Amino acid sequence: MSPRDIVQRRYVGSAAAFVAGMLLSLSFAPVGWWPLAILTPAILMWLWDGATPRRAAVLGFWFNAGTFSVGTYWLYIAIKQIGHAPFLLALFLMIGLVAIMGAYHALLGWFTAKYLPPRGAVRWLVAIPGAWLFTEWWRSWFLSGFGWLALGYAHTDNWLGALAPVVGQFGLGFLTLLLAGALVTLVQGERRSRIVAGGVFVAIWIVAFAVRDVEWTRPYSRPIEVAVVQGAIPQDEKWLEDNLENIIDIYRTRTREAHGADLIVWPESAIPDLANNHIEFYRDVYQEASAHGSSLMVGTLRYDENPKTGEEEFFNSVLSMDKATPGVGWYDKHHLVPFTEFVPVPGFVRQWLKLMSLPYSDFNRGAAQQAPLESAGQRISASVCYEDAYGATQLPALRTATMLVNVTNDAWFGHSSARYQHLQISRMRAREAGRPMVRAANDGVSAVIGARGEIVKTAPEYEANVMRTRIQPRIGLTPYASAGNWPVVCLALVFGLLGAYLGRRGKNA
Image 1 (cartoon, helix red, strand yellow):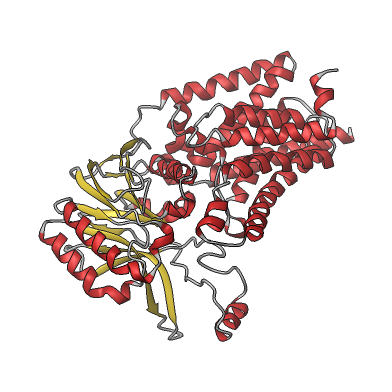
Image 2 (image 1 turned 180 degrees about the vertical axis):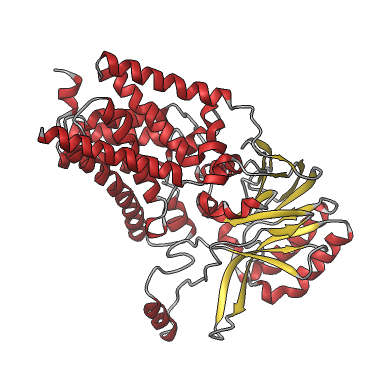
């Protein structure tokens, strides 16, 4: 019995798809076995050959279910261990996310079997890579989006990553799928198709190698010294009212250790209370820092009054304090976390919750496009927590920004792989932009990332400390920053539709 006959069996094929999906999760941080990002999609493409639409949908579902059940296991920590939700609720939410992610690939598998050519170079090198990448892009924004574990992120530490400033993370994902399709073609295609596939495989790596040393942006001004204050407050203690004064004292004391750095950065919601309640504290800390030549950027919560409605609005924000800038600067988080920072329900339902005095989270979104913050002589594109996974949102700011800052609190996910996956996402953003990034986390991973996505320095995890180092701000636009995701997304759509057209024409011939 051939391997093809074995995997065509119902349970064996599903198990193979699930295991392949699990292995794909190992291509990302912290394991970083990036060749699996090429090999495992090739396995699924092979499993799809000859499958009925229904069977291909099942295989696609189990592949993505395997990826996200292993790759996002840390959600259980946030929901059950940190959030103290009932076990059944935590399990339900975990299964729900895995099922939703599996549904995307179920649809992709159905489309592949229903409309694409049954085999050949067009199927493996054109149609499936295009349809797959388009589905991955769709997943990144639909219903607020979840772009975690996208294929392109696997390439922060190899030659292919050198193309990030040219084609962006989705472009890297597209190239990954072309490489996977080339593998399938080399194994199953006829002689002419194998020659084409071999050429595609080699050409991608040659181009990536050729641009590895290209500098897409140029230095701006002089290098500056940055400092990250990592408070390392345990998540289960951070929001206890009795701990507030102790936390305030930690950040006051640690910031004094950072005095003299051009820019001092605190993590997301460093002080677990509204900034409006601690105006004098923030003023005093800044004045001390400013007297030593330091500017200050802090992650904080705040409220403001809507000038039109008179209602209070709450924001998860970054506050910038700099003597060269009149007043203060604010960046307000735009991509909020569903069911944590806002309830994704219509406005009238939200109003009913208010009237009934029912507990719920309801932060307000910041504007989709916000000007860079001016601090330490730099123009800084800021982001809060996981919104740096939405790479396209930073593009408008890059026209003037000289560096990136991300403030986050990955302590929600305990001692898990989530923080390293998030760090990998931040590295991709820096490489796409051709700019350094300062990343301030509550208990890690706080890091300074270079313009090529390399780690310049990290702070020890799970302990309060101050990390200091120097970076070189940069200016100018990479090709990706100029064009964005649309060229790659449109090309993927064309590839998928072309494959469907040729597939339907072949079936009707």
